[in-house]
Image 1 (cartoon, one colour):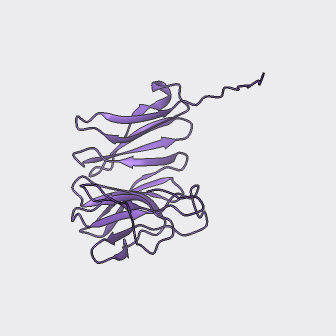
Image 2 (tube, helix red, strand yellow):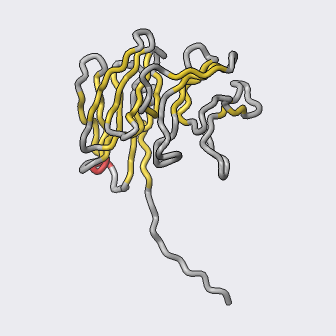
Image 3 (cartoon, helix red, strand yellow):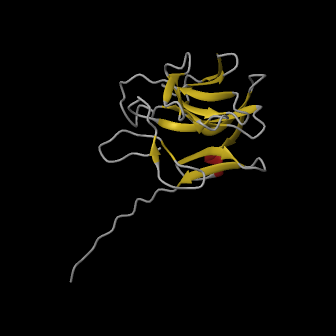
Length: 199
């Protein structure tokens, strides 16, 4: 996804062997969080969070087929964004637009299931481990931490507190490596003031 000056966020795709960028030709003004579907010709995507674009516009999750150039809305996806497709392609995670809920949608059953309903913490950047049996989501409130949710059991567990990990004001997990290690990014902000004197 990318954004040109004075234009909405858009999704682009490129052939595996390289070449030109192609804009996703979907009738959705702002697009975000693209995921390849298992068929290799469809893209699951959502819309940016309210802080990024169109704060008052409705949100939903869509599937665009590149061969037929058709776009369909995922049933019941109104009010959800930030989709993350599972490793087996049978389901995806999504956040509520108020960023306090995490749910999973199963394609075969066409059903949504709520995994986390956090009244106090803001949720961000869901991700899957490679086995697809659990999910991760970053939570921000009185503490900044990573939560693991077991999909079948619905149980949650705090995995790590970012404040104990780093002095950085903002850390988050964005994925899992092949050896099951967590991929964590931290912003280290500088607040230095400089003066330039001409002679």
